[in-house]
Length: 390
Picture 1 (spheres, rainbow, N blue to C red):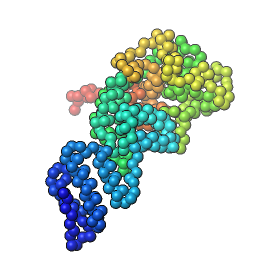
Picture 2 (picture 1 turned 180 degrees about the vertical axis):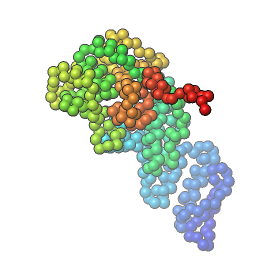
Picture 3 (picture 1 turned 180 degrees about the horizontal axis):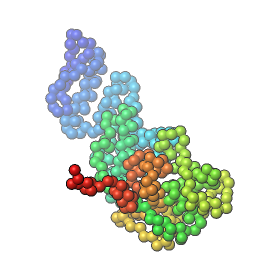
């Protein structure tokens, strides 16, 4: 039974009671009214007994604290559920026009909520545990996702939960303590010049233009397919477009990418019937989705087969994960960056043209030929030629 007393020099009631580990402790109730102090200590004792018996759940402890606040202030504590916070955080991405980021992050966060279920989704943000996040990561691996994809999911969860921590909704970011798998990602390879020529020989008009454009600008599949004649300035020999994947990350006022056109593509473009304004440059490919059975990626894979180009495949997967291909349309982007590097174009210029935000990202796209290494090594002076000379 708790005991209340006052010190002569304090207006507050002091309570002596048995805490959660069975020891008697004395704490100030911060109450000047004896009745209020009695009610508060009764709640303390109730929580301590449950904790001592191993029956105090996180939800019960939060309710006890909420009741204490209500009893002392008359106000309910406002707590945002995990699902509401995730949705608000994602909506904020759209508000800041980070559309591609929001589009990539939403399936991951909604997938996490589906994994933990409606009851846990309705709990507060501070209730998320590292173990729960690790279980979600492991479940993704069971579904056939790659370690890289699973790690990216943890990265997205960490970004959201870090925002919650900064808002004071959680004391820590539980995703930070979840171990990353850190396996080397499967990497695309560039097409050789011979393979590019084979693609051009077996492609129809629109795909010929797409291959030439991608190998000379590094443009991505959907961005290329959806170009209109208004994007091109033949006098300046430039193409202007908004890269759907990276435009929201640009730190400049202009989200557009402006790339100078190589003569190969300019010649192809001049050979086409010229349209105006919003008329598509690649009418048979315009508006088609990159994925799905009849999508652009499948169409390009079929073009590779006709050209006799065989792509190495990654590990076979079960479930939802896609099997990795070393060669795809995205390899044209690797081809572009590698050809620039092999032509001794500086990394700074290459990054600007390709639209890469960091050296780390750009380095994954550069594959130096042995001839480029030969030129670099042969440019160094001999170490041994002057040995023995005084």
